[in-house]
Length: 321
Image (cartoon, rainbow, N blue to C red; front, side, top):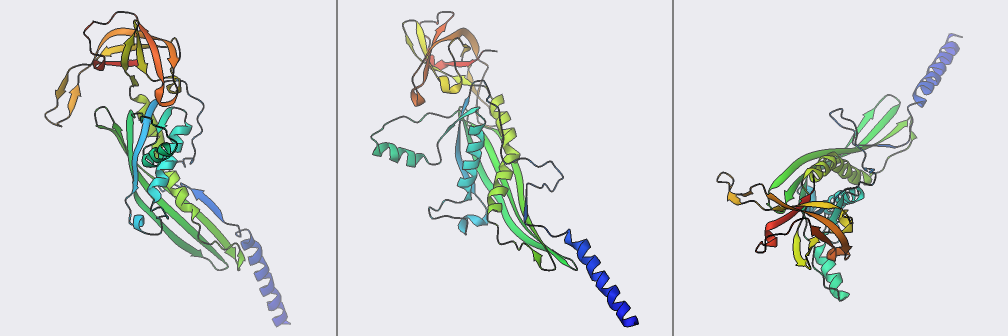
């Protein structure tokens, strides 16, 4: 009789254990950018409302993978590594914001080859700013947490990116930042019941995307805080032709300030040439927009006549404050 009672107790203990642990069984779940510093997670995508204003022309000069993975399985058939993937993600983020004109640089040779096949000849538009970036850290690890009745397998990918923003007029680095991102997937099993997680290659993409999310907001802020510029390139019948057009947010009736460039002096400490503050000499009003793509121009009228001998190359067009 005592043996039978013990068997009943043992059965009840096992049943109770199953009830308590059954709630631990779950399918594979993924987490992106679970920060190790208890910072709020940043979404891999940035939803921006259309922004009115003048757009800066930006190009990504290069984005390279400087980790040991650059010579391993992360190289595809075209010998393009994950650095190109990072460049594509960053370019898409900036383009989708609606605040910049993104110019192709990474695949410039491919663009020129295609134009040659189509019999097209065109000049490449110059960028106001260049972005140089690299993936300085990339790695994966898999850990397991084992309990009495359960097992939890965790796959984790971590990436760190570094970006620099360069002003093409001066060649100076105006902004630099480092950002890290993390992506992880968990799979739980209880008494052998549950989903068994295979190798999740998508975590690589999510970690890189999360790392770029950490730097893209500050990068955009610095780009927008940098002054917008255009140039007068010719005069015709008392009116002037200004670079830029509708795609940059310019509209008929817009007013701009015409500055005569200040004197350039060399900084003996850095060796860079410093341009002193320019002098306002006129206000320009857009009267007509013309052209498309690389050939966009604006026709402007000035509120005052320029000196006859003035060199247009010494003038710069700025936003009117």
